Length: 329
Image (cartoon, rainbow, N blue to C red; front, side):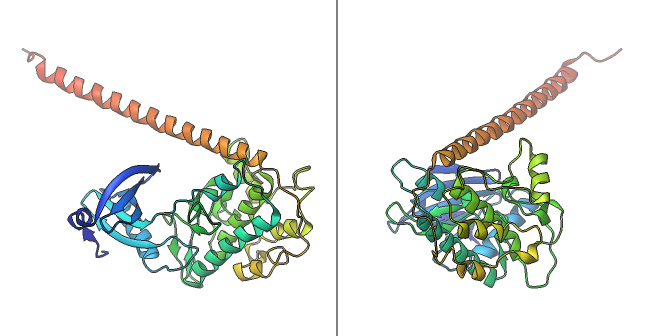
């Protein structure tokens, strides 16, 4: 059991503010410290032992991490039904939303800057024997509105995996998971590197390389490592950039670049890169589709909740009817 402070201590130090985001396992709120600073508070359900164990695993991972490209853990607090993880507040928003804005002029040099930071962050995580296992655009966030410093966030699926330990998982987001996850094979640092390849592909083109019309089709594409560099989107992109992606989207995880090899790759060294401005029209459409997909998931979840409420209401009515029915003679 992790030694966490109680909610009384939280109330003495922080004031809960506005909702920042909502996910499957909890919500994130802006939290105002009584020291004058702003933080992010991740509120996780913990009534079930499984949920509490998951939250404690995330805390165990986060509390030992200290790197300029990884979100900083502040503290954790507990109640019988909820765990609150206090983290640094990142005011800059998602990287993809930043570069997809009409005011931003995206170039390959910019992309190299972003990918170097991601790779440095992942290199640090792997040096600490941490696998993130859910790298995706939503989890790459700008530290603030005025700089291009980015950080890796959301360690809800991250695991401490010592070298040579065999671990199988079924987690992550469909478009970004590696073939070994689909096959329920052992994961390793290379599993995160596959996701970096997908992120790079989307950043440069606005298209998702493996996304199918259904989740099953997406998994099939991933299993076959079936993708191509679409025209005209990749016509203006340098060969070094394409080679960088190819060296990450390798079906054989042993063949994928490590973070160190990525940082030494000619593309991230900005050798022979294009100076064209990259159109972000497709990226804007990608983000719009993602929003609609998320809305659809919320609607489906609410529908399931409504059905459960109606069923429970009918059960209660039936119980009441049976209680009020006259006794049989």
